[in-house]
Every structure is written in C-alpha cells, then in structure tokens.
Amino acid sequence: MSFDTRDFRSALGKFATGVTVVTAREGEENHGVTASSFNSVSMKPPLILWSIDKGAYSLNAYRNAEHFVVNVLSNEQVDISNRFARRGEDKFAGIAIEEGIGGVAKVKGAAAHFECRTWNVYEGGDHLIIVGEVVRYAYRNEGSALVFHNGRYAVPEPHPLLLSVGERPALNGRLGKHLLYLMRQALAAYRSDFYPRLGSLGVNDNEWRILTLLADRGPQAAEALAERVAQPQVDLEDTLDGLRERGLVGPGEDGCIRLSEEGQALSLRLLAMADDYERRLFENLEPGEVSAIKSGLGRVIERLGAPL
Image (cartoon, rainbow, N blue to C red):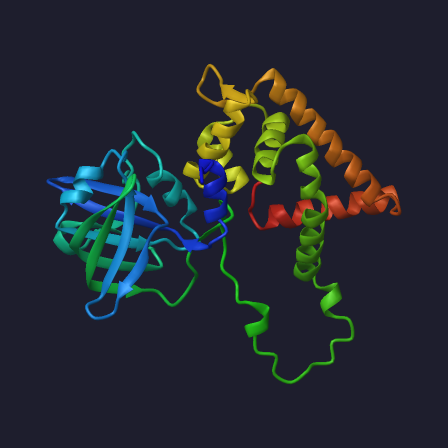
C-alpha cells in the first residue's frame, strides 16, 4: 500500500501528544529541536525515547551526545516550540535556560524536565530512535502542558465524564447562561456544520484558515501565520506545501507567504461561502442583535489579550 505523506501525517495527528524541546550539547554549542515523538519505554530502568529526522541539521550532535534533556513545554510556551522547530537562527537567544546534566541546557518554565544519559540509538527509517536513561527529572504541579492534536496546538482539559459532580445543585438554567458554555457549544455546532462544506471547494479546515487569513490580512511572515492559525511551524509548512503544489500560494518579494491569483480567487469564493452561511444562520435575528453578538465577542477577545 502506498501512502500519501500529508494524508498519513493527518492520520497520525489524530493521536494527541505533548510537545517537547530536546536539548543537547556539542562542545560549547547548545542544540535544541522541537519533538512530539517523546514516549516512555521502561520503569526499571527508567527509559524514555524520542526520534529525530535524519535530515536535521543537528543530527550528529544528538547521535553522538552522551546526555540530552527532554523539556516538556508548558501551555504558555508555544513561541518556544515554534522557534526550535525552525532552522537557521540562534534558537536560544532570549530563552531563559539553566544548566542540566552534562552542561545541557534546560528550558526554564517547562512543565517537566527529563535529564537523560543516552542508552542506545536505533535506525528507524528516515529517523533515528534515541533511547535515554533518565538520571534526574522534575515537574511543576501548577499550570498545564502544551498539546498537539489534529495538526494544531491545543490545551488539555479534564474530560467532562471525569469531573466530580458532588451534590446536584439547583441550576435553574444557569449553565445555559454561562458565556464559556455558550461559546463552546456554538463553536462546536458551527464547525461541525460549516467545515464539511469546505470539501465542495477542495480544501480542509487548516487550508481554509490560511487562505482566508491571507486574503483578509495580505502577505504574512511564516512565523506570524503559524501563530494566527495556531499551527506549529513544521505542520504549517506541510499545509503550505500542499497549497504550493496546487499553485495557490507562493513567496512574496520580502519572503512572506502570499496568495497567487488562483489562491486569491479561491479565497474569495471561500469568504463568500462563509458570508452566505453566516447570513442564513442569522436570518432570524435582528441586525442589532447580530452586531451586539460580534461587538461583544470582540471586546471579550480584547480583554483577554488574544489577537483578532
């Protein structure tokens, strides 16, 4: 059976993982790379593993390293994940670090650290599988770890079935008036009804976000685009590769991602589809009610400090 690489990656993306930065040291130089392939192997002895692409610039540093550190990123460290997923820059500039085992850098503020001695290195197709023996570890009880799911960053939440209910309170419809509940219900219903319609124009939800953002905001640097669509840089590049192959996006004169003429035409169709869907969704509401919903949500987003 032959595999389409992007489709296979999408299938693997259904398995939610944490996000780590694995660090090592070669001479006086620190190395770091974003990895979601981290996993436990054994309790006795305490072994973990992760894998690195054989095309990685720092492959030999990790292949030959005596020690390495797995930094499990916290929910607030999306920018660090994106930085260490890129090539060609001083990844540690401005990053708060401390010295770990063998002089290897540890990222401050991480949800957990696993300081390892390299146990073995195995061949794994186009990757090397690196097994480490955990020598020291530490973790924070406060906060939560960053999650990767469906090609995007996500946040972990307790499953509703596992939440303690306690004594049944007299709700009297209180939940149905709670902003967070209403927003989540509305978003889930909107997505489940609108996203399948994108297939009629041959795009998925990740491609929809990129195309419509570029149509609305103009050319974007890859870093800014990744932040706005909440995709890690490596997965954004995978989505962009598919759009490039179809001639929908290309590089601008300043290196920013821009829409081609075909991409612009498709994006306008997508936005027209979204406008029509919204118009029919709100057709039973008065214009003032629609305006109040949108302006109110805009003020909430502004108050929470998130970008529009």
